[in-house]
Image (cartoon, rainbow, N blue to C red; front, top):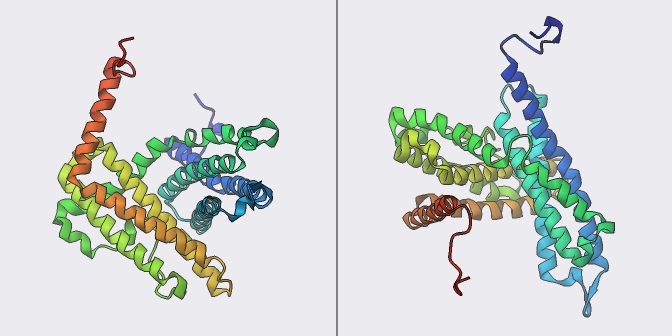
Amino acid sequence: MIPVENVLGEVGGGFKVAMNILNNGRFGMGACLTGTMKMLIEKATEHANNRKQFVSKLREYQGIQQKIARMNMLCYANESMAYMLCGNMDRGAPEYQLEAAISKIFASQAAWDVCDETIQILGGAGFMKDVGIERWMRDLRIFRIFEGTNDILKLFVALNGVQDLGKKVTAGGVGALFGVAKTQLLGIGPIKAKLHSGLAESGKHLTADIAQFHVGVAQKVLQHKKGIINEQVTLNRIADVSILLQSMGAVISRANAAADKGDASEIAIAAAWCSESHHNIALLLADMRNSAVAKSDKATLAIGKASLDEGGYFPKSPIGC
């Protein structure tokens, strides 16, 4: 028995307390990994600005510029989502577990990607112990596992999204969804009517993407009904789109707020992130509709099952040994 004075919250409410602790941990991850990414970007840019390869410094090469740009975009998107989640929490939002899960998934993967690219830019030096980046990479690997593995959290995000859609589709079919506020699924909130001119296209992309996503998910719910819980390949795609939509809403909101205060310096990075996300969302939604992709998914799963049945790598050696 737990002594009365040691009970946290209400009796019988332990699960809720535990979930709130996890939510706060997931929020904290998004915030703290922003600092890690900033340090890594500083290391990468310092090396690129000073290291000369052949006749030019690394900074002059498009390949390096592209890497540095994407690292900045990942950090900006992650930081924006952390701010948005923090704002919801400060306003006393009763439910923010989906946003916390999305923030955790994005932050842990983005930090890993930024660290990996930093090592790539530094080359052999990035692998050396005295530089310290290899230590950061080892430490970062745990973030995709604890506070809920990214794999499970993706299913959590997707299944929570399709749960409400399932009820609406059952009641009125896909057509019933067009009368529903499209942003309700993600909790992004309505898109601000007046955006900075540099974000107008991003706002249109986000609105269109949410609408397309809403219908695409509804079609999958109609197709699989309750069996969708077992369609993890599809659920992962749904989660990936959800994460990108959340990130788009966050960067648009942040960059637009800064522009309202006279600072338009963040417009370019927000617009670039939304353009890339819009493209990736189109690919993910197309994959959800494409029968050829479904056939490819089935073949891939069959290979996984065969390997599991054989206890490992199963193709035979071509030289008979």
